Amino acid sequence: MATRNARALRRPSGGTVRLRARGLGCALVALITATAPLVPAGPAQAASPNCPTVGDNSTWPYEQLGAKQAPADGNLGAFRAPIEVRKDGVVCKDSYVNLVASWIAIEDAGGINQIGLAHRWSPANNVDQYCKFWAIGIGTPQYYGCSLSEPSDIYFWVDTASISGSLHYDLRDCGSTAYTTCSSKSTQGVRSGTMVAYAVGESNYGDSHCIQQLMGSTGDKQNVGRASHLMEVRPDPSSPLNSWNVPTYDAYRAAFSVNRQTGAHGGSLNWCANYQWDLVSTNGILLLWDDRNGS
Amino acid sequence: MARKLVAPLLTAVVTATLILAALYLHDHRTSSSAGAVQREYGAGAEGPQHFVIASDTLITFDSAPADAKNAAISADDAYEAYIDQPIPNGTTVRYGYLTIPLTNPDDTGSATRYAYRDQAVWAYTYHECEPVRSAPEATGRPDPLPTPSCKMWNFLDAQSGEQLVMTEQR
Image (cartoon, rainbow over all chains, first blue to last red; front, top):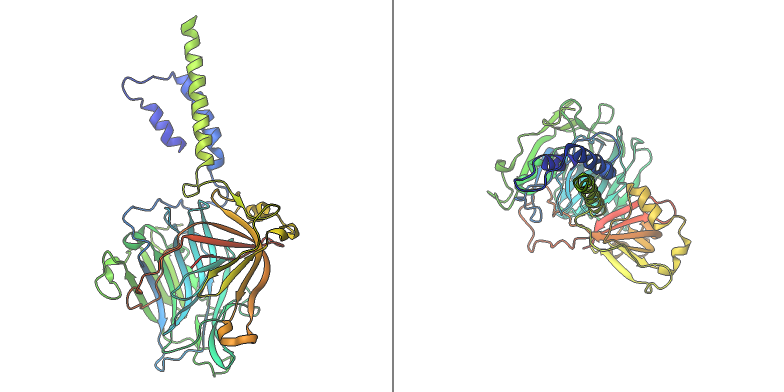
């Protein structure tokens, strides 16, 4: 802001009062001093841009990319992976909450059962936040622990729990302890219908979502899964607790916006060319990054 | 003599104007905030109220204005520790008890388990709109499309200041 004002002052319009150089210098020093508290403290991160005005962020827009596993028998007992906290990306700023997220989930006929990390813009507080979140059903996020720091991996686990005679999803946050100490966030999702596991990076801002950056960078990609703890599934609820395996995940990418909807599930028109992902280590690790992010 | 006084005087006026403008912008940098912080706890606050924060995940909050004296950390200190800045203008602050069931009581009856049950919290409510998100492979938008309430609830533990949950009312 100081720079913008300085430029304006250096270009007085014709006919207005012209300031002497000494007076201008004093004014600038005073202005810079007065505005100094506006600069946020903390580690150096790319400044989030203002959102363009063409976004349709109230009407169901997104892009998602990553991996999915749809077992032949439509049955999954559990899915788990660590997700790396990364703060390289940007989200855009306007009057809405805008977000970029990385998460794991099992989806079935009842909707999503999801847990992961989110980089969100909080308009009320005028800050970026890095949070954990979980969601069920249509996916409204329940944020918590919005003070994440890097480097760290958070171990997430979508498990099955038998409750009062019926099978539910158990969304578990195991912190950084590699599944040894976990806390349940919700067991309200009831298992029903065909199940599919997802590990996904996501951006929400309609046709203009590409202004936002995924959390990883070209030189330091965001890991979902590690060599020591690959993305893994337990085939069905009745399988032994230690019967984890790493299936062959399929690549998954989808986008949707009402402004450009070309079908029931959007299409490549909405894909952001800067969003990158890769499946490595025989598919057990998903890497997410934004190629505009060189750091 | 008069001409000699004009320049310093003009400089002083411009400088003061710029400082006041900068201070105004500093105090009003949160464009979405409006009004002062409203505190509905302590002496003179209205009686207890029951809020259903999320009808799908069954998150509820029972305000208890008179119990705010029991908080180990003030509402302001908790918020400052949470986000390193003061409570934004336009926020309503309440004290009370948060309940988040892990299971739906309709499914489990007396066996219901809780993530938090009657947990003493500071509750901060402000205007913030979540985007409507989509599940993968969704077959289209739900009908009718959910309407965001734009009422964000943020709950901080009244003993430790830890953030327990933040979600849009629905």
